[in-house]
Image 1 (cartoon, one colour):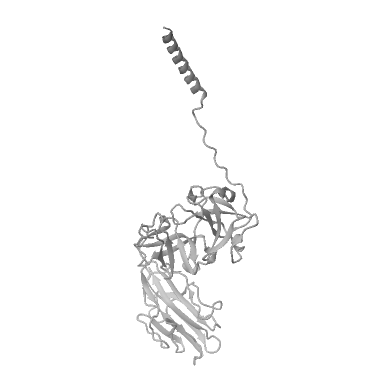
Image 2 (cartoon, one colour; image 1 turned 120 degrees about the vertical axis):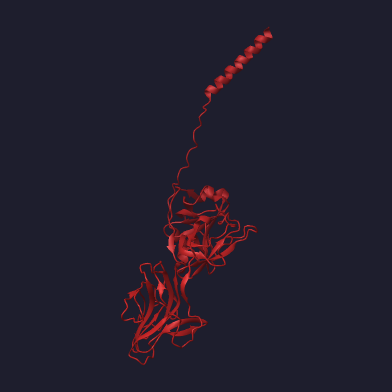
Length: 419
Protein backbone atom coordinates (compact mmCIF):
# COMPACT_ATOMS: atom_id res chain seq x y z
CA UNK A 1 0.00 0.00 0.00
CA UNK A 2 2.75 2.43 0.88
CA UNK A 3 4.75 1.33 -2.17
CA UNK A 4 1.81 1.99 -4.49
CA UNK A 5 1.26 5.47 -3.06
CA UNK A 6 4.98 6.17 -3.38
CA UNK A 7 5.02 5.13 -7.05
CA UNK A 8 2.09 7.33 -8.08
CA UNK A 9 3.45 10.21 -6.04
CA UNK A 10 6.80 10.01 -7.83
CA UNK A 11 5.10 9.81 -11.21
CA UNK A 12 3.02 12.90 -10.47
CA UNK A 13 6.10 14.81 -9.38
CA UNK A 14 8.02 13.94 -12.58
CA UNK A 15 5.06 14.90 -14.80
CA UNK A 16 4.73 18.26 -13.04
CA UNK A 17 8.47 18.86 -13.36
CA UNK A 18 8.44 18.16 -17.10
CA UNK A 19 5.48 20.45 -17.67
CA UNK A 20 7.10 23.15 -15.59
CA UNK A 21 10.42 22.82 -17.51
CA UNK A 22 8.63 23.05 -20.86
CA UNK A 23 6.81 26.14 -19.73
CA UNK A 24 10.12 27.85 -18.91
CA UNK A 25 11.86 27.03 -22.23
CA UNK A 26 11.52 29.42 -25.24
CA UNK A 27 10.54 27.16 -28.13
CA UNK A 28 10.77 29.82 -30.93
CA UNK A 29 14.41 30.55 -31.75
CA UNK A 30 15.75 33.92 -32.87
CA UNK A 31 17.35 34.17 -36.33
CA UNK A 32 21.15 34.44 -36.16
CA UNK A 33 22.27 38.05 -36.30
CA UNK A 34 22.93 39.32 -39.83
CA UNK A 35 26.58 39.83 -40.74
CA UNK A 36 27.37 43.50 -40.52
CA UNK A 37 28.63 45.08 -43.71
CA UNK A 38 32.22 46.18 -43.82
CA UNK A 39 33.08 49.54 -42.34
CA UNK A 40 36.55 49.73 -43.86
CA UNK A 41 37.26 52.66 -46.18
CA UNK A 42 39.37 52.35 -49.33
CA UNK A 43 42.50 54.49 -49.45
CA UNK A 44 43.70 53.74 -52.97
CA UNK A 45 42.43 52.44 -56.29
CA UNK A 46 43.46 49.14 -57.83
CA UNK A 47 45.18 50.98 -60.68
CA UNK A 48 47.20 53.04 -58.18
CA UNK A 49 48.15 49.88 -56.30
CA UNK A 50 49.31 48.13 -59.47
CA UNK A 51 51.32 51.21 -60.45
CA UNK A 52 53.40 50.73 -57.30
CA UNK A 53 54.90 47.50 -58.67
CA UNK A 54 58.65 48.19 -59.13
CA UNK A 55 59.48 45.23 -61.37
CA UNK A 56 60.11 42.72 -58.58
CA UNK A 57 58.16 41.39 -55.60
CA UNK A 58 56.98 44.19 -53.33
CA UNK A 59 55.71 43.71 -49.76
CA UNK A 60 53.20 46.49 -49.11
CA UNK A 61 54.33 48.41 -46.02
CA UNK A 62 51.73 51.18 -45.97
CA UNK A 63 48.18 50.71 -44.57
CA UNK A 64 46.52 50.63 -47.98
CA UNK A 65 42.97 49.40 -48.56
CA UNK A 66 41.44 48.71 -51.97
CA UNK A 67 37.74 48.33 -52.66
CA UNK A 68 36.19 46.43 -55.54
CA UNK A 69 33.63 43.88 -56.68
CA UNK A 70 34.37 40.19 -57.12
CA UNK A 71 34.02 39.52 -60.85
CA UNK A 72 35.36 35.93 -60.74
CA UNK A 73 35.43 33.36 -57.94
CA UNK A 74 36.37 29.68 -57.60
CA UNK A 75 32.85 28.24 -57.74
CA UNK A 76 33.30 26.51 -61.12
CA UNK A 77 36.87 25.36 -60.54
CA UNK A 78 38.29 27.40 -63.42
CA UNK A 79 39.92 29.79 -60.93
CA UNK A 80 41.95 28.22 -58.12
CA UNK A 81 42.58 29.79 -54.72
CA UNK A 82 41.95 33.24 -56.15
CA UNK A 83 39.38 35.99 -56.52
CA UNK A 84 39.40 38.56 -59.32
CA UNK A 85 38.48 41.94 -57.84
CA UNK A 86 37.69 44.94 -60.05
CA UNK A 87 36.98 48.60 -59.42
CA UNK A 88 36.35 51.44 -61.86
CA UNK A 89 40.06 51.74 -62.63
CA UNK A 90 41.42 48.20 -62.98
CA UNK A 91 41.24 44.59 -61.84
CA UNK A 92 43.62 42.44 -59.80
CA UNK A 93 43.99 38.79 -58.81
CA UNK A 94 43.94 38.28 -55.03
CA UNK A 95 45.55 34.98 -53.98
CA UNK A 96 44.55 32.83 -50.98
CA UNK A 97 45.95 29.77 -49.20
CA UNK A 98 42.52 28.15 -49.25
CA UNK A 99 39.61 27.11 -51.45
CA UNK A 100 35.80 27.43 -51.59
CA UNK A 101 36.15 31.19 -51.43
CA UNK A 102 32.85 31.66 -53.24
CA UNK A 103 30.91 30.73 -50.09
CA UNK A 104 31.82 34.04 -48.45
CA UNK A 105 33.02 36.06 -51.44
CA UNK A 106 30.83 35.19 -54.43
CA UNK A 107 30.75 37.06 -57.70
CA UNK A 108 28.92 40.34 -57.27
CA UNK A 109 30.03 40.91 -53.69
CA UNK A 110 31.86 44.11 -52.82
CA UNK A 111 35.02 43.46 -50.83
CA UNK A 112 37.68 45.53 -49.11
CA UNK A 113 41.25 44.21 -49.06
CA UNK A 114 43.85 45.32 -46.52
CA UNK A 115 47.06 45.30 -48.55
CA UNK A 116 49.51 45.97 -45.72
CA UNK A 117 51.81 42.97 -45.35
CA UNK A 118 50.71 41.36 -48.63
CA UNK A 119 53.03 40.86 -51.57
CA UNK A 120 52.50 42.40 -54.99
CA UNK A 121 54.10 40.06 -57.53
CA UNK A 122 54.12 39.33 -61.25
CA UNK A 123 53.21 35.93 -62.66
CA UNK A 124 54.06 35.83 -66.37
CA UNK A 125 52.61 39.27 -67.00
CA UNK A 126 49.75 39.24 -64.47
CA UNK A 127 50.09 41.21 -61.21
CA UNK A 128 48.88 39.30 -58.14
CA UNK A 129 48.23 40.32 -54.55
CA UNK A 130 48.66 37.80 -51.72
CA UNK A 131 48.92 35.21 -50.45
CA UNK A 132 46.29 35.44 -47.68
CA UNK A 133 46.45 32.62 -45.13
CA UNK A 134 43.15 31.02 -44.12
CA UNK A 135 43.66 31.73 -40.40
CA UNK A 136 44.22 35.43 -41.12
CA UNK A 137 41.57 35.99 -43.75
CA UNK A 138 39.45 38.30 -41.59
CA UNK A 139 42.48 40.54 -41.06
CA UNK A 140 42.88 41.10 -44.80
CA UNK A 141 39.47 40.98 -46.43
CA UNK A 142 36.16 42.48 -45.35
CA UNK A 143 32.75 41.74 -46.89
CA UNK A 144 30.55 44.42 -48.38
CA UNK A 145 27.16 44.34 -50.06
CA UNK A 146 26.14 41.53 -52.40
CA UNK A 147 24.54 41.68 -55.86
CA UNK A 148 26.78 44.42 -57.20
CA UNK A 149 26.56 44.50 -61.00
CA UNK A 150 29.71 44.90 -63.09
CA UNK A 151 28.96 45.15 -66.80
CA UNK A 152 31.61 43.67 -69.09
CA UNK A 153 33.39 46.18 -71.29
CA UNK A 154 32.90 45.40 -74.99
CA UNK A 155 36.24 45.21 -76.82
CA UNK A 156 37.80 43.69 -79.90
CA UNK A 157 40.75 41.32 -79.73
CA UNK A 158 42.99 43.98 -81.23
CA UNK A 159 42.03 46.46 -78.49
CA UNK A 160 43.01 44.16 -75.62
CA UNK A 161 46.11 45.46 -73.84
CA UNK A 162 47.62 45.49 -70.35
CA UNK A 163 44.97 47.87 -69.02
CA UNK A 164 42.32 45.15 -69.45
CA UNK A 165 44.15 42.42 -67.52
CA UNK A 166 41.92 40.95 -64.77
CA UNK A 167 38.90 42.89 -65.99
CA UNK A 168 35.59 41.47 -67.16
CA UNK A 169 35.39 41.91 -70.94
CA UNK A 170 33.00 40.89 -73.70
CA UNK A 171 33.99 39.86 -77.22
CA UNK A 172 31.10 40.04 -79.66
CA UNK A 173 30.83 38.40 -83.06
CA UNK A 174 33.19 35.53 -82.23
CA UNK A 175 33.19 31.79 -82.72
CA UNK A 176 35.46 28.85 -81.97
CA UNK A 177 37.64 28.09 -84.97
CA UNK A 178 37.19 24.83 -86.86
CA UNK A 179 39.56 22.89 -84.60
CA UNK A 180 38.02 24.19 -81.35
CA UNK A 181 34.28 23.99 -82.13
CA UNK A 182 32.35 21.00 -80.83
CA UNK A 183 35.14 19.74 -78.57
CA UNK A 184 35.46 19.63 -74.78
CA UNK A 185 36.56 22.80 -73.01
CA UNK A 186 39.36 20.91 -71.23
CA UNK A 187 40.53 17.40 -70.36
CA UNK A 188 38.22 16.57 -67.48
CA UNK A 189 39.35 12.93 -67.39
CA UNK A 190 43.04 13.58 -66.82
CA UNK A 191 42.39 17.00 -65.25
CA UNK A 192 44.53 18.85 -67.76
CA UNK A 193 44.04 22.44 -68.89
CA UNK A 194 43.42 23.04 -72.59
CA UNK A 195 43.87 26.06 -74.86
CA UNK A 196 41.18 26.55 -77.50
CA UNK A 197 41.05 29.22 -80.20
CA UNK A 198 38.38 31.89 -80.53
CA UNK A 199 38.11 33.73 -83.84
CA UNK A 200 36.68 37.22 -84.32
CA UNK A 201 34.37 37.14 -87.33
CA UNK A 202 34.92 40.73 -88.45
CA UNK A 203 38.70 40.67 -88.37
CA UNK A 204 39.86 37.02 -88.38
CA UNK A 205 41.87 37.87 -85.25
CA UNK A 206 42.22 35.01 -82.77
CA UNK A 207 42.70 34.64 -79.02
CA UNK A 208 43.21 31.72 -76.63
CA UNK A 209 40.38 30.54 -74.39
CA UNK A 210 42.03 28.56 -71.58
CA UNK A 211 40.07 26.23 -69.29
CA UNK A 212 41.13 24.06 -66.36
CA UNK A 213 40.62 20.30 -66.34
CA UNK A 214 39.13 20.77 -62.87
CA UNK A 215 36.40 23.13 -64.09
CA UNK A 216 32.88 21.76 -63.73
CA UNK A 217 32.35 22.43 -67.45
CA UNK A 218 35.60 20.75 -68.56
CA UNK A 219 33.80 17.84 -70.26
CA UNK A 220 31.11 19.99 -71.87
CA UNK A 221 31.32 20.59 -75.63
CA UNK A 222 32.03 24.03 -77.03
CA UNK A 223 29.26 25.51 -79.24
CA UNK A 224 29.55 25.39 -83.01
CA UNK A 225 27.76 28.70 -83.69
CA UNK A 226 28.78 32.31 -83.19
CA UNK A 227 27.90 34.94 -80.61
CA UNK A 228 29.63 36.55 -77.65
CA UNK A 229 31.90 35.58 -74.76
CA UNK A 230 32.17 37.20 -71.33
CA UNK A 231 35.50 36.43 -69.68
CA UNK A 232 38.38 37.65 -67.57
CA UNK A 233 41.19 38.87 -69.78
CA UNK A 234 44.64 37.59 -68.90
CA UNK A 235 48.04 36.96 -70.44
CA UNK A 236 50.69 34.30 -70.20
CA UNK A 237 53.97 35.94 -71.18
CA UNK A 238 53.20 37.32 -74.67
CA UNK A 239 50.03 35.27 -75.26
CA UNK A 240 46.64 36.89 -74.84
CA UNK A 241 44.07 34.62 -73.24
CA UNK A 242 40.56 34.55 -71.81
CA UNK A 243 39.27 32.68 -68.74
CA UNK A 244 35.52 32.12 -68.47
CA UNK A 245 33.88 31.84 -65.05
CA UNK A 246 31.09 29.44 -66.00
CA UNK A 247 29.86 27.73 -69.13
CA UNK A 248 27.08 30.31 -69.38
CA UNK A 249 29.70 32.97 -70.13
CA UNK A 250 29.77 31.56 -73.67
CA UNK A 251 26.64 32.46 -75.66
CA UNK A 252 26.87 31.33 -79.29
CA UNK A 253 23.38 30.64 -80.60
CA UNK A 254 23.81 32.37 -83.97
CA UNK A 255 24.87 30.69 -87.19
CA UNK A 256 28.59 30.48 -87.84
CA UNK A 257 30.21 33.42 -89.58
CA UNK A 258 30.91 32.77 -93.23
CA UNK A 259 33.27 34.82 -95.35
CA UNK A 260 31.74 36.31 -98.48
CA UNK A 261 35.06 37.88 -99.38
CA UNK A 262 38.44 36.99 -97.95
CA UNK A 263 41.27 38.47 -100.00
CA UNK A 264 44.80 38.24 -98.59
CA UNK A 265 46.50 38.74 -102.01
CA UNK A 266 48.49 35.55 -101.48
CA UNK A 267 50.71 34.73 -104.44
CA UNK A 268 49.91 37.83 -106.52
CA UNK A 269 52.69 38.71 -108.97
CA UNK A 270 54.85 41.40 -107.37
CA UNK A 271 55.60 44.69 -109.11
CA UNK A 272 52.77 44.02 -111.54
CA UNK A 273 49.33 45.60 -111.83
CA UNK A 274 46.75 43.62 -109.85
CA UNK A 275 44.38 41.56 -111.95
CA UNK A 276 42.18 39.65 -109.50
CA UNK A 277 39.01 37.79 -110.56
CA UNK A 278 35.96 39.98 -109.95
CA UNK A 279 38.00 42.97 -108.77
CA UNK A 280 38.28 46.28 -110.66
CA UNK A 281 41.57 48.20 -110.86
CA UNK A 282 41.08 51.65 -112.42
CA UNK A 283 43.36 54.64 -113.02
CA UNK A 284 41.28 57.84 -112.91
CA UNK A 285 44.24 60.24 -113.10
CA UNK A 286 47.56 59.21 -114.56
CA UNK A 287 48.30 55.65 -115.55
CA UNK A 288 49.42 53.99 -112.33
CA UNK A 289 47.30 51.20 -110.83
CA UNK A 290 47.32 49.22 -107.60
CA UNK A 291 50.12 46.66 -107.81
CA UNK A 292 51.08 43.42 -106.12
CA UNK A 293 53.89 43.51 -103.55
CA UNK A 294 55.38 41.28 -100.87
CA UNK A 295 57.74 41.36 -97.90
CA UNK A 296 59.02 38.42 -95.84
CA UNK A 297 56.50 36.09 -97.43
CA UNK A 298 53.48 38.35 -96.91
CA UNK A 299 51.68 39.48 -100.06
CA UNK A 300 49.56 42.65 -100.31
CA UNK A 301 48.31 45.40 -102.63
CA UNK A 302 50.26 48.65 -102.90
CA UNK A 303 49.77 52.12 -104.40
CA UNK A 304 52.18 55.05 -104.51
CA UNK A 305 52.86 58.21 -106.51
CA UNK A 306 56.58 58.04 -105.72
CA UNK A 307 58.63 58.68 -108.92
CA UNK A 308 55.46 58.85 -110.99
CA UNK A 309 55.90 60.47 -114.41
CA UNK A 310 52.41 62.00 -114.27
CA UNK A 311 51.64 65.14 -112.32
CA UNK A 312 48.65 63.63 -110.56
CA UNK A 313 47.64 60.10 -109.65
CA UNK A 314 44.29 58.60 -108.65
CA UNK A 315 43.70 54.87 -108.66
CA UNK A 316 40.78 52.76 -107.38
CA UNK A 317 40.83 49.10 -106.30
CA UNK A 318 37.22 47.86 -106.11
CA UNK A 319 35.90 44.58 -104.71
CA UNK A 320 33.62 42.13 -106.51
CA UNK A 321 29.87 42.77 -106.01
CA UNK A 322 28.48 41.94 -102.56
CA UNK A 323 24.83 41.28 -101.71
CA UNK A 324 24.07 43.70 -98.85
CA UNK A 325 20.46 42.68 -98.21
CA UNK A 326 21.59 40.83 -95.09
CA UNK A 327 23.86 42.63 -92.55
CA UNK A 328 27.54 42.42 -93.41
CA UNK A 329 30.77 43.48 -91.74
CA UNK A 330 33.91 44.68 -93.51
CA UNK A 331 37.46 44.60 -92.19
CA UNK A 332 40.93 45.07 -93.66
CA UNK A 333 44.46 46.12 -92.75
CA UNK A 334 46.44 49.06 -94.08
CA UNK A 335 50.03 50.21 -93.77
CA UNK A 336 52.04 53.14 -95.07
CA UNK A 337 55.65 54.20 -95.64
CA UNK A 338 57.38 57.59 -95.97
CA UNK A 339 54.29 59.51 -94.94
CA UNK A 340 53.65 63.00 -96.33
CA UNK A 341 49.90 62.93 -97.02
CA UNK A 342 46.63 61.12 -96.25
CA UNK A 343 46.08 59.50 -99.60
CA UNK A 344 44.01 56.41 -98.79
CA UNK A 345 40.20 56.33 -98.46
CA UNK A 346 37.73 53.44 -98.10
CA UNK A 347 34.31 53.94 -99.73
CA UNK A 348 31.18 51.99 -100.62
CA UNK A 349 28.69 52.26 -103.49
CA UNK A 350 25.42 50.52 -104.27
CA UNK A 351 25.16 51.82 -107.86
CA UNK A 352 28.64 51.19 -109.27
CA UNK A 353 28.48 49.67 -112.73
CA UNK A 354 32.02 50.16 -114.00
CA UNK A 355 32.42 53.94 -114.02
CA UNK A 356 33.54 55.40 -110.68
CA UNK A 357 32.65 58.93 -111.78
CA UNK A 358 28.94 58.16 -112.26
CA UNK A 359 28.52 56.08 -109.09
CA UNK A 360 27.56 57.41 -105.67
CA UNK A 361 30.27 56.74 -103.11
CA UNK A 362 29.98 56.93 -99.32
CA UNK A 363 33.20 57.19 -97.24
CA UNK A 364 33.50 54.49 -94.58
CA UNK A 365 34.56 55.34 -91.04
CA UNK A 366 37.53 53.14 -90.13
CA UNK A 367 41.09 53.10 -88.84
CA UNK A 368 43.69 53.79 -91.54
CA UNK A 369 47.46 53.88 -91.38
CA UNK A 370 48.72 57.45 -91.09
CA UNK A 371 51.26 59.82 -89.65
CA UNK A 372 51.00 58.29 -86.17
CA UNK A 373 52.18 54.88 -87.36
CA UNK A 374 55.62 53.55 -88.10
CA UNK A 375 56.60 52.63 -91.63
CA UNK A 376 55.07 49.30 -92.70
CA UNK A 377 53.15 48.97 -89.42
CA UNK A 378 49.89 47.20 -90.19
CA UNK A 379 46.78 48.86 -88.77
CA UNK A 380 43.48 46.99 -88.35
CA UNK A 381 40.50 48.88 -89.70
CA UNK A 382 38.26 47.53 -86.97
CA UNK A 383 34.87 46.01 -87.80
CA UNK A 384 32.96 48.23 -90.23
CA UNK A 385 29.19 47.78 -90.08
CA UNK A 386 27.61 47.67 -93.55
CA UNK A 387 24.07 47.00 -92.31
CA UNK A 388 22.97 50.49 -93.37
CA UNK A 389 23.33 49.53 -97.03
CA UNK A 390 21.22 47.22 -99.18
CA UNK A 391 21.19 45.85 -102.69
CA UNK A 392 24.42 45.07 -104.52
CA UNK A 393 27.44 46.90 -103.17
CA UNK A 394 31.09 47.41 -103.99
CA UNK A 395 33.81 48.52 -101.57
CA UNK A 396 36.56 50.69 -103.04
CA UNK A 397 40.04 51.66 -101.88
CA UNK A 398 41.01 54.97 -103.47
CA UNK A 399 44.56 56.30 -103.57
CA UNK A 400 45.21 59.96 -104.49
CA UNK A 401 48.68 61.52 -104.82
CA UNK A 402 51.07 63.50 -107.00
CA UNK A 403 54.70 63.18 -107.97
CA UNK A 404 55.93 66.27 -106.09
CA UNK A 405 54.54 66.44 -102.55
CA UNK A 406 52.04 63.59 -102.06
CA UNK A 407 54.03 60.42 -102.53
CA UNK A 408 53.17 58.32 -99.47
CA UNK A 409 53.11 54.59 -100.16
CA UNK A 410 49.95 52.84 -98.95
CA UNK A 411 49.46 49.10 -98.62
CA UNK A 412 46.32 47.00 -98.26
CA UNK A 413 45.82 43.45 -96.99
CA UNK A 414 43.32 40.94 -95.59
CA UNK A 415 40.15 42.47 -97.03
CA UNK A 416 37.26 40.53 -95.53
CA UNK A 417 33.47 40.78 -95.67
CA UNK A 418 31.46 38.42 -93.48
CA UNK A 419 27.76 37.70 -93.01
